[in-house]
Structure formats: C-alpha cells, structure tokens
Length: 523
Image 1 (cartoon, rainbow, N blue to C red):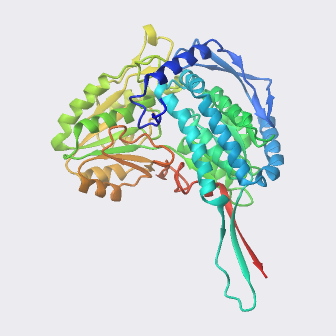
Image 2 (image 1 turned 135 degrees about the vertical axis):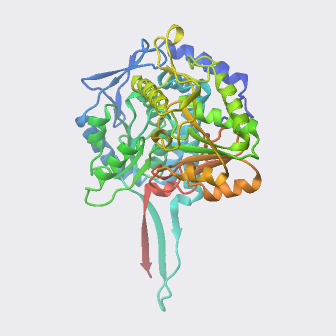
Image 3 (image 1 turned 45 degrees about the horizontal axis):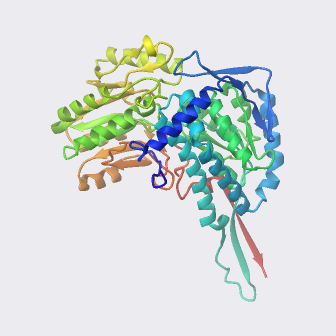
C-alpha cells in the first residue's frame, strides 16, 4: 500500500489491505463499546456529574460510549487552563511547536483504522469516507506545519527607512492571538476539528475544542492524539456538552478567536455575540452551502453522472459541499437524467461498516424527520421523485435512520428548497435553455461554497470566471462539488458560506490565526 495515497479523490478504488485493516480494527472497537470517556482539561481527565449516552445512528440500540455533560463551570476551567498555558506555549520556538504537531499527525496516522472504525459507528459514514476524514486531518496538520516552516515562522524583514545617519531595522512578526475556541460539526468531526485546532496550535495559540454532541466520542480520541504527542498542560483542552449551555458559556469575551463550522443561523449569532466585546475578535466561520452543478450540452455525460451522484449522496448528503442543485442544458437533459437515475438506484444502503454499502444512516432522529418533512414539501410543491423520497424501515433498517437517495425533478425554480440547505440526500434537477440561464440560477443563492461544471475547455474558463464560489471543479468524475484536500484544493466559501475569504488547507490560512506586529529599531 506504500504507493497508494488516500484522498477523497483516490478513495474509490483502494488496495485490499486498506479494507482488511479496517475490518480487523472494527472487531476490536466493537468489543469495547459502552466505555465512559472524560473531558480533558489541563491534560487531566475531568468528569461531570451528568452524563450523555452516545448511541449509533446505524442501530439505536448500540450504546457506543458514555460522555460528559459539561456545564458553565467546565467552560471556565478550560478557559483558565488555556489562558494560563498561553504565555509559555506562544513563546515556545515555532520549530518546537512544529515538531510536536507533526508528532500528533503521526499518531493520527498510526491509529488511522481504529479512529475510522469509531467514526463509521458514530457518524454513519461508510468506511472509505471515514478513512478519508481521519487521513485528511493528519494532512491538514502536516500542511500547517509545512507552511509554518516555509514562511520561517512568519517573521519577515521589511524595508529600511531612508534616514540619513541612522540605520532603521523593520521586522514584521505574526503573533498568536491567545485562547482559540474550535466548535466543530458532526459530519467531519476529525478534519473540521483537527484542522483548525492544529493550525491554531502551530501558530502559538492555546485551544479549547467543543465538538458536536453526536460525535463527542471520536473527537475525544483526536484530543488524545494531541495530548499523547506531548503538548504541555492547558495547551489543548476538550470539553463536551450541549451547545446551548456549555457552548454558549464558551462564547464570551474571554476567548480571543473562534473557528466555527455549522449552520448560518448559529454562526451569525456567534458573530453578533462577539460584537459586544471591547474590541473585535477574529471569527472564522464556515456556514454551509447550496452547491450547484452546471452541465453543458458538450459535457462527457458519464463523467458528469459519476461526479454528481458521488457528490450528492456521499455521507448521505450531509456535507456542506454536497451537490444539491443540478442545472442541465436542454439538449442533453433526458440522457443525463437516465444515467443519474440508474446510478443512484445502484447505490447500496445499509450498515456503513459493511464494504458493499455506500450510504449509511443520517445522523439522528431530527435529520430523519427533516427528510420526511422536506419530501412532503416537495410533493406539495409539485416536485416529482425521479428516484427515492422514502425512509427505509423494517428488517436491517428497523433500528437506524435510513433515507433513500433522492433525485427531484419538476420543482419550480421559485420554490424555497432550491435555496435552502437541506443537508440530506436530496438533490434537485432543472432543465435550462443555455449556460447563462444556468449561471444566473447557480449564483442566485446566499451561499457560495463549492460548485461543479461539465463542458468543453472554453466553457470551463467561462465557468471559473463567472461562478460565485470558493471551491470549484470542472469535469471531475471523482466528485462534482466534493473532495477537497489540503495542499491540493483548499476549502472555504464566499458570501454566506464563509467569513474569511481564505480557504483551509491553503497558502493563506495560517495568518488568520495570528495578528501582525511591526518592530522598528533605530540604530
């Protein structure tokens, strides 16, 4: 397997060794279900009086772990520990921080199969998606370390003042802000926790991690990788509990910076809450997408169908990058729709730990009910189900939250669901007269995260120039709108999809976690 590099683009045909090691580790993980896991504050295990039972969406009879229901006092403990650790960590030479973070990335890779097995059970991802999430995390951390080294710790000599009789020395130094809070979502619990946490740490900030309650177990195992790498006490802290209590307690002026991935409504509230502080704090928000694919009459339809289906229904459509709106030029509409229907109906649905299954369950009962509500709304609005539209019950589906991958036609473009992020395996299709009409509809949405195109070379350049999106792909069968990877396709959005205008896993991301100090000395 040494020549195989696992990314979201290469995961569709991995070597047999990958499957064998995953299955071997899954047996060990399943034998240890139900253990209790503490929070981590100041490198110590911290238990709360109240607990949270973590059940699998695959089968709700499976209790995976017992987690802590942290409260405001735990938020204060974590902030105090991180604040106390900041002076020492921020003044640790950047080369030493890089060394420790590379060690953490190495531990993630050493534990790849164990961590992926846990993720599949807790999130409902298929094994390849889970392996990709874990490996991407290691690569995000290593890329951050690479950028720190390539920029020599972000210390740059500037020009000299034209002073007669004096020697002016001007140096620009990027320095960490302080205590950084990372609030991560359920769908990529490793990459969207470990990526920003690793970046905050390597740039000299101390970190508090608050994961989604649905995926607290696997993020605890990520926190252990950081702790086991030898980070000093208080440098990284991990707390668990409901967002409305513990999460809200962390959103105070005592935090120096925040990275949040989640809904637009919650992200906007965080933004507003921080506006009441004595000064502006950096807030990095990734707030979803409503991602369009445009298919030209000159497209390779086999590539388009493969890329659309993979991006629409990977992780049950629970990706902010999922292909949720497809605009197809009229001359090839019927032919492409036939291919999309065939390929979607071939997708296997079931327990995602099994190799054959592409789709697992949605994350929880709320998502399951949302799927039912959206499908009812589509029917009421005149939409037709090309395929799907139903939840799966009975037999192997009886104890989980399984929903059919769903393609929708004939839904008027004025219907609200063309612009509302459903975050489920539902994708809407529309026939358009020309590419300009497709582009107008693609851009007529608040979000601007990812987008895909299939067409000829000249059309592709037009697409890149016109689309309002932070991550763009053309003629990609591996995924029409999904599959970003650090160092290859940095990930981030425009408009309501992101606040910084810079993409994670790219050249311009690390400076977001630091502020600049210019140092002038006259000799």
